[in-house]
Length: 340
Image (tube, rainbow, N blue to C red; front, side):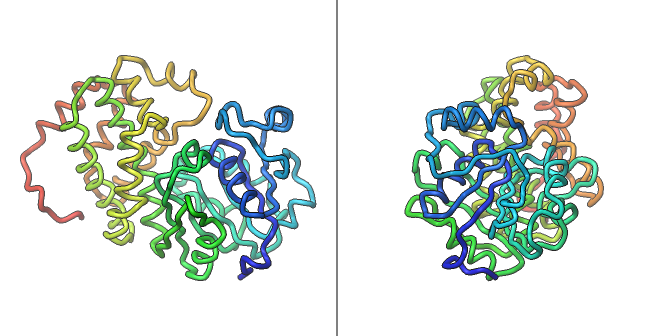
């Protein structure tokens, strides 16, 4: 494993808000950073304005960051790769890089989602497309705007290789960006993905003008659903009380920055999903993750009533108030129950 002292060149695949933020953070720490984007015209916009006006407005991009849409031999010099492409586009983007990177170069995935057709997590997609690279996750409650502005943030580095997780922890840590480690990759990745589904439900509550009681109930029971499925898939229960479980869930359900919460809020106000998505410049991962999570709940025979109702609201045009009534009128249960 390459040590931080010898690691200098880092490539970020994906020039959205989070990829740009991490590029800036690492550049400030002294790394030689290349920020790659798929859209050549938008890359030219970044080069011209030195600002990601679409995804990270108001944050200047330092001159020292290399910005490109080319896939050339100079990318082969990277000693660490950051994969920051949204899940629906991840496979097609990574396919462009097959054979580019030196075998064994570590890859850090910061993507939150679950692929619809395969039900693969982003780390599995990376391995499936690029082959056998050491992989770490870097996930947690981390809005790009807040990190870019230097507001205190805490995330998790997760890998089955403890040395890689500690390397990622060292590479990314700053006085305002604290990184913990957790070996439970499945739980960390699932929690970070599934919270977006619950965030859509939280937004619906906001759009319907429900109160704090409703939001508290939703977050609490949403965490139960996330934990149920995660444990059924081999995760550790304790992971879901941590940063990529409860922490990420709280942030996404209450934040005005949250795209998924915003989608739900618009639905609660009576707008249709297609109309909402057509007006968005960024992707709301939770919309597509809802399909995958419902499929996983069937595969692992896990009860997930909130996810089921959100799926019906999104994809079968179910009235949100009817979905809430169905959840509230389910058969009475004890709160203290087995998660699986």
